[in-house]
Amino acid sequence: MAEQTVAATPAKTASQRLTRTEKIGFGLGDLACNLSWQLAGGFLLYFYTNVALISAATAGTLMLVARIVDAVADPVFGALVDRTRSRHGKARPYLLYGAVPFGLLSVLTFTSPDLSPDGKVIYAAVTFLAMGIVFSAVNIPYAALMPLITRDGTERMQLGTARAIGMSVGTIAVAVFTPHLVSAFGGGSEERGYLITATLLGVASTVFLLVTFRTVTEHQQDVPALRKATGPRVGLLAGVRQMFQNGPWVVAALYMIVNFVRLGLLTTVTVYFCLYVLREPWAISVLLPLISGSLLVGSLAAPRFFARFGKRRGNQLALGAGALLFALLPLTESVLPLFIGVYVGACLVISISMTSSFTLTSDAVDYHEWKFGDRATGLLHAAQSLTTKAGTAVGSAVVAWVLAATGFDPHHVGSATVTGLRWLYYGAPVALLLLQLLVMSYWRMDEQQEQILKDLGERRDAADDS
Image 1: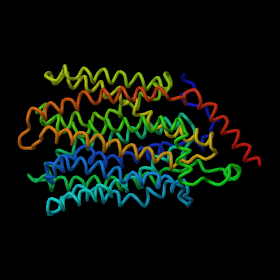
Image 2: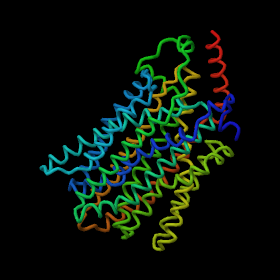
Image 3: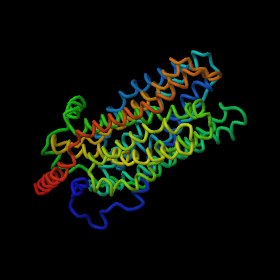
Image 4: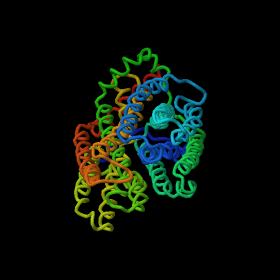
């Protein structure tokens, strides 16, 4: 129902409304994260197997284990955000102090020092793990900014659109320009090319994170009287228990992890698919940016689309159409222009669902405050970073394990590997899109959010009066 998707909130004065600078600055935060993170997601496995010469099975296992280990940091950073009190706010300080380390580790991850085979594996594991931890330190606070910036449903969808555009631009830039930059700067050496490219993107990530810090304001702060009325803040373990009792958060977390398994798998396999199945290296710069880059178009259509259908039904329609188009792709493989056309259509409809995914956890924050009296903004948004990392790591690891199981050799790719790549590229996305559709059938906030926001407003008014 349209009026329930973007929940009503009290009217704002002109001075309270978000400015265009704030919306653009917020979107630049996702651009910053995606410049370095998409480089790792799209090219790190290839860098490990073809440049650092680490075996596919070892590289895939390394990436998965590192993500599982650094996932422990996610709820810690979420809890820290909830407890942070500073002149910069709750979430913004982490962008200020985490920007430079994130950019630096983005470079170190794409460095291949002259070490023994075991030394290279250890170096890769340490740098990849460290990059994931620092990513948590900036991405969780960044994700937590949305409910700290505004409670207004319309403005949240606008911020989600800005974030989707930032993600899209970052993905397109990395996918389109990375192969050319590596070639231009490498001068025949992929190792040197990747190092210089990672350095450029790392510097850009740092700068854009600092711009987000400078332009965004945390307008929504705790109401002291309401905090006193609801009692002391619960501990981390109790907060985690409450988190799993938050139905909308559980649905959002499951939805996001399946989404990022699909994105991680597709982002990783596309390079190999273009090289060894299509045998068209130029297609990397066309197909790879469309995976998330289509958000640039989908995000513009999303607000009206979800206002018409609601988040549950709207996402189901988009995901169902995307699954159907992906199922048609194998029939078009021999006609590349038709293949690309169907692929563009699939990416566009799926991108509409991606835009709404950024707002799901923010809606769950409102539900958490309504049910437990504590917003737990940082802790709940830790799930977004955790699902991003865990999902992409699982997707990348599956690609690596299939390559290993089919006897992948970068110098001689056999028919078994080609068959495995086809199953990964066609079959897996269809199954994961249908699974996302099933998970979204349990989303109930479309019907509940308007009443929840009304109740919260009354509680805050009562707390102010007291």
